[in-house]
Image (cartoon, rainbow, N blue to C red):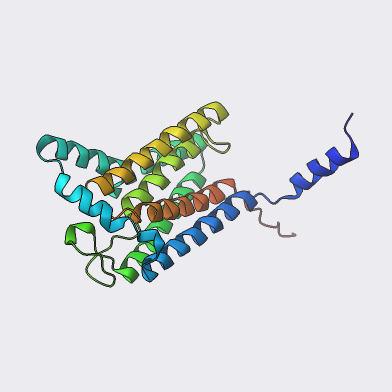
Length: 235
C-alpha cells in the first residue's frame, strides 16, 4: 500500500521541469569554469602546480616513434580535426535512423558552445603555453582552457548519449553506464597526454573539462526538449 508521504514524494519529483537536471548541471559547470578562469587571472592556488609540473616533464619528453604515437593518440582524443568528423558522422546516422534532425541540432549546439565560449576565454586571457618557457597572460597564446580536453569531453560523452541515452538511437541503461566510464577514461587520457607532452599547463585541463561539460549539458537539453507545437489557426 502506498502511503501519503510516498505519494507526496512521487508527486514532488514529477513537478520538476524536464530541463531542470541538465540546465542545473550546465550552470554548475559554467560557475566552475568562471571560478577557474578567475583563478588563472588572479594567479591563485588553482595554477600552483603548473610551473613545477612543466619543469618536471620538459626535460623528459619522449622522441622518435614513441613521441609520434603519443601525439597521434592525443590528437585522436581531442583535436577537432578528428573529433568533428566522428561526431558528425554518428549524428547524421542517428538523425537518418530517427527521421529527425534534433540530434544534429544538439550536436551543433554543443560544438558552438565550445567554439564561442572557448575562444572568447582563450583570446581574452592570451595565456602562453608551456612550450614558450613562460606563463604569462595577454601574450601570444591560447592555453586556457584546453580545447583538446573540451572537445574530448563533449565528443565522447555525447556519443554515448546519442547512441545509448534515453533519447538516443538504442536506449540501453546498462550500455549507457558502461560506455560513460569508457568516455571518461578517454577524456582523462587525453588531458594527461596534453600535460605530459608539455602542450598545456595542468590547470588548462580541468578548465577544458568544465567547458566541455557545459557544452554537453546544452546538447543534452536540446535532445530532451519537447517538440514545439504551434497553435492551430481557426478556420
